[in-house]
Image (tube, rainbow, N blue to C red; front, side):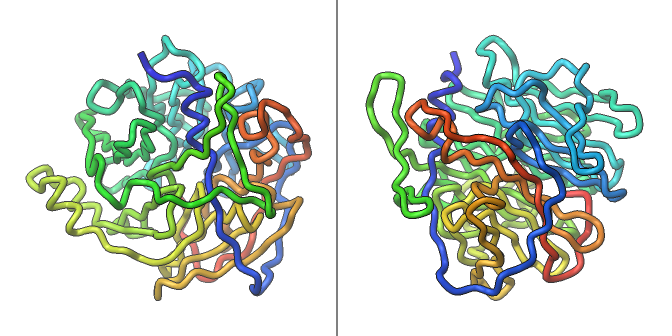
Length: 358
């Protein structure tokens, strides 16, 4: 049987690094929300879709942001608990990653939704090649041209892995399981000067370390970018090499490049110049890892950027982020809920042009 949701979510207490000096980017509020958002996907037409974070027991799974407010989207689909979502750059459809963690009897799945109708056009059930007792299918990257989806599984059993789904055949397989670049580092958990501790159901206090979670793909779909949540580095590897089944995991691991520095974080996205945008939760901000490997904090705000989580590029050269205050949620605050609305979707101007649909 898979681990319970509280045990898996406990693994998402993370550590954060911050910067004292930075050039403040303008923060624009795209939406004010009564329920906490999870991740975000923006279409080429500028439609904004947000998952509601399952840690809060949301009223639905997916909402669309319309005129700055949340409207339920595709709420008649058979969904259990969705965090990851991405727009397919080729079809324009929305992929939903239902990790099913809130129902121990449910099966994780990928659901492809036609944005014109809000109806599912395909469902791929996750099999035992992609799921085990410690799996948490958290976020995804869609390689539309390669007909593949990559899923980050931080896997609390200490074997963080990359799950690959072949969209033509439906075949699923793990890559790089247990390899160093996917594993957490031993970094303390500090937000706004406060060291976070998670109280387990048995009363014990833990500071979990979390493996691969941030994941994104370059606009030309040549590179897959990723890092461990509790980690200080962004890595990348060629998409074709991940898909090459003749290449062993050890051989593939040798092809991984360390792209640059990052704070411990939950979400990333990439612009056309190779700037990797980062949710810098410890600094209550948003940052960027540049192509030269250096990291820079772009914006910080104790209210508007209190636990930035999911990221997506949008049209007009914007980077969008969800803000959900998880540090004061019951999950991360000893069972006490001090996380009150408003929650936000915000955006900042990107440093370079952005190609939408990743």
